[in-house]
Image (cartoon, rainbow, N blue to C red; front, side, top):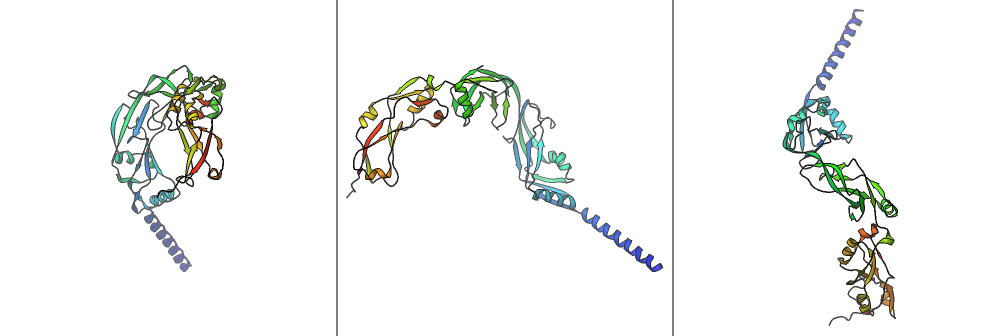
Length: 333
């Protein structure tokens, strides 16, 4: 019995010793340099404020040195290896930066008291950069004209009712409220009209929407006015195989360039078409080099792509056909 008691005491002492060693190891203080962190403008920031950090909505931090128990450091490392990123939300109101102006944020102080870091149980030793600039704009209600754009942000000629809306924008920034139409919406706006809510896009990409909507209608194809393009240029498209080896001889070139091109278009689309380097193209194929008689081929009309998408321009005649043949270029001596 005495032997068993001594053996039991020995096991208890051993267990307690191991427990102390494990506890001591877990409490060991270490440092860790974090290079995957960012400060972001909080989504909860007052909607009447526009806040930017270093001219954007987010700033990546080059380096943060953290200090704390080894167990906490290990936990953070595992979290980062899993693909997570330590992100700190910046709320201008909480930082007493809710008036329009330029501020400097002391990152060491900001990070040290941030709840995101408190959850890790670690302290900030140092960080790079040490400070970042903060710019705050108060938003105010203004009446802005409304402009229409396609999905690629190209302007569209449209009838917009009402032509102006009230919207919250920075006091010192001017601009227009926009409505953006996709392909299906453009077709609907030509048939009847579509309803859209105008928005204002801030330089950092943030979108502010109006509280009211507008009705948008586009001119129907059949109602596009007839117009003539009297001065136009012809270009030829040949492959590398033909280039330099053959000359394109167009028999009816005076007729092509002398006859005006009849189109239906908006004024803006017509002007853009006239400013294209070439208004018409002749496509020449490699097989044309084998032709033994004059080839007849319709010309391609080089309408600006954005006005084709918005259906603001179309040909109002049958395509003119070019009469041509390829003539071999004599080699120079």
